[in-house]
Length: 147
Image 1: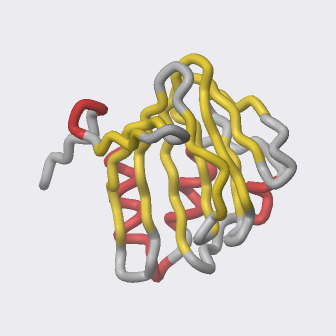
Image 2 (image 1 turned 90 degrees about the horizontal axis):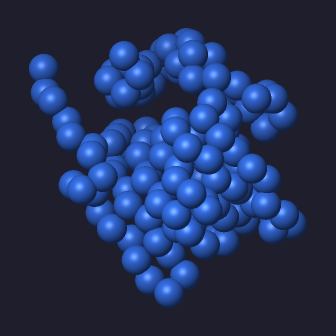
């Protein structure tokens, strides 16, 4: 067993005129799946940019906003997620505090309903357990985070 720390103070601080958040890279597997954990404090934001891969942005605590190509802000809180397809422009931020788990990968087999329905972490975990070719790396990371 290996214990991994992803506390905010040990993360990479992303700071510029337009960007402000702290991030941890948790997983980067051979199939191109990447998983990260982000901390956004009051008035932090991830600027409008193009998704380089399919991306699931799951809020695990707090509240914030996301926007798509129309740049209209949509409020997200714990238990809600946004999904962007590769090539879609998007951004995110918070007026208070938000912690986010981000999973992305080219050609990822995210459930189609992720775009349209609110879904909880349990549904996503069950889905990832069903992807046999990626199950070991993703399920181990998800088990670590949620149990």
